[in-house]
Image (cartoon, rainbow, N blue to C red; front, side, top):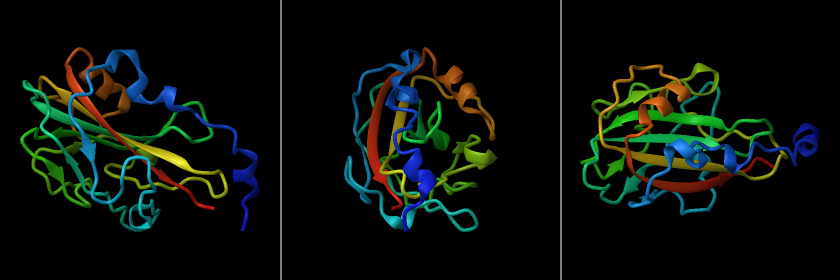
Length: 187
């Protein structure tokens, strides 16, 4: 069944230029690779990982190659630039990822996380941890951009930090970055 609201807003999107990835203060070499065993770059994210209001939001497993020398902490930001607004929807803000790890297991972006030292910022509606894809039905495919940043120092952000606070903490301390794009659509 076609959703008339989604159909009417189909051409309104924040755009990829609104992602943290595109901002001048977070530019860094793309010198490691981020992947997922759940989906390939540019392909659909499985239904299993979609957003749910009153149920578990199960984050996909993520893997990466060795980050650049000097990396003290990895940061993950997941955003949807296809929402019909001026800014992308933020689906995850995670800091404190140990660079010696090579992966985040499925559902480890929950709050609290099973990974030691991991802290979450406030995402949609104040939610901490992963909030899966939940685009407006009939709006068309949405991109979900997993942006991982390698920092040359550890952040001191406490739980419930904001995206603005995270960007301030990252500024001037990036040594690398990696990106994985997935899609999701509700027809």
